[in-house]
Length: 231
Image (tube, rainbow, N blue to C red; front, side, top):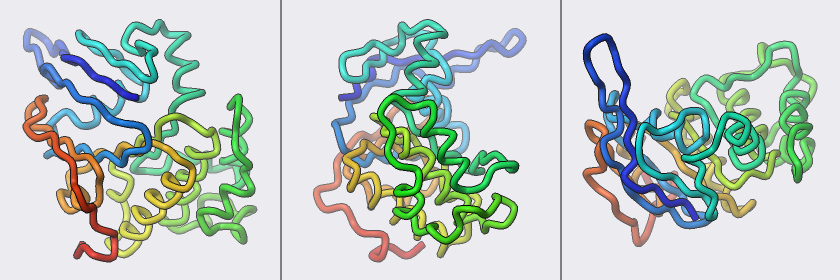
């Protein structure tokens, strides 16, 4: 489903070249839960931004279902983000002037084959919070809205950038359990970047990044449930 070949991303900072990604190659199958783990500066967010069409590689190829996204122009990347990608950010990125339901409906309105906003809100356990603004929601509730917003588009990929980074451990575990549950129920491929090595035990597929390179690429034969790990 998703194929990356020798992907490189280089930034020019003054006279210095920084190699954020240095020849990354891997394949992720449909409906996998893949965790990309690494320390700060390993290249995780850069990789996720390229997979999500928010950045372009300096070299290499990236294919999704046979479409070579690495060759897309700006208009094609915009369509790609709109149709194929659901993003869950660390800090939620909800619009403060819209209610929980309206934030989800905004994503529904730009999608070609969306799911129901009301049903997605119910699926993340916030049926009774539909008319609340983000300021009246806890951090965990805001992240639940963000998950529903990502899924309502009915995208090919769900991409998560440190989705529990701003949450306490109990709420973080609940969010991970919810993400994996709704992704599985909706037959989505879930890719999550994190610095938390514990999350690798939950994934089908693990990629470990260090200094812009993949140093480990392996599968868990028996992934654990969230309840089985100590945060």
